[in-house]
Image (tube, rainbow, N blue to C red; front, side, top):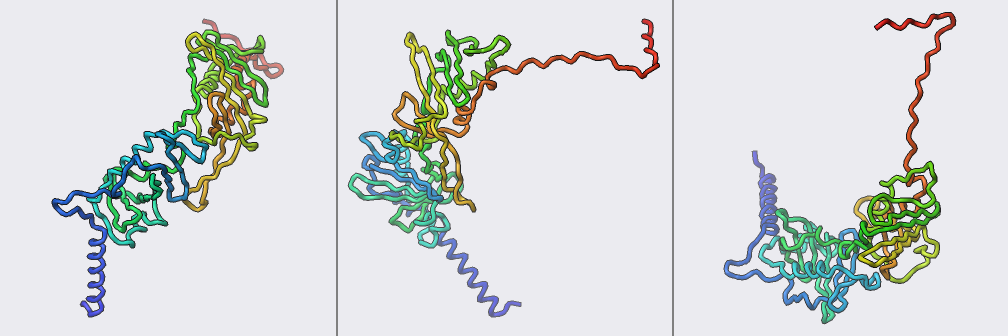
Length: 353
């Protein structure tokens, strides 16, 4: 039996449901009125700076340098400008025709609050002003909640998604740092603490030879091919800058790789110098608060920039030793031995055919 108290509670619950529907139910624009851009009077060619921050506090900063985009904190390392302009174009296309909420109380729930967001995109304009866009949770159907800094309203957009806007440098640069044609490589020399290993393939094809190979040693061709693959196509984690620092360890390198190639009629030499193994902490969600990873410093003779390369590549170049390039000797076939019979026992007769 319904009491007066139960009726009051039921009424409160119904009111809360209505409020939730009013606040969060998607709204379209008024019929006949065009959808306005989220960023009014926004011109992509007037953006001169861009900072992206993720929810863990990781940040990447980009700046315009003439007609190109660079990483100013990495001594103007060139970014892939088309990736930046594509993002700006998508931001300019966001419209306000899919209204989701219009109260400040909804911002944290949708992760578009000033202190609780999936991505914060800060745009520095030519006139010195700043425009900020927050990307929040997924709204389903390939859409994301979005809010402009000066507005309370939250909208849905399919133009740009949070995971498309990464706050890591590698997302905005060409990560292929060094490359030469494998088929044009005539020789490889690897120097590290274990020794100097010299390999040649004078015609650019066929089998490799190794300097100093003993008569009873055989070169493992696959090991040289693996090394060739690793040193002729080097990808970086991210750039460091032009200025050499003592902690980079280039004064006493862990390894030096020299490549000799023949490209057309011209022979060329390239050098890769591997420096110190360093630790990098990146902010991450979860109880730990950060995740640590190791990288090596690398410098190519073809680039003025020092870069970070993977721990795997660095360990490979620094720790290779002579035995790693030699084929294992064949396993000898054991010789059958006669089984000794107990004293006094007779050898069994072989049955006739």
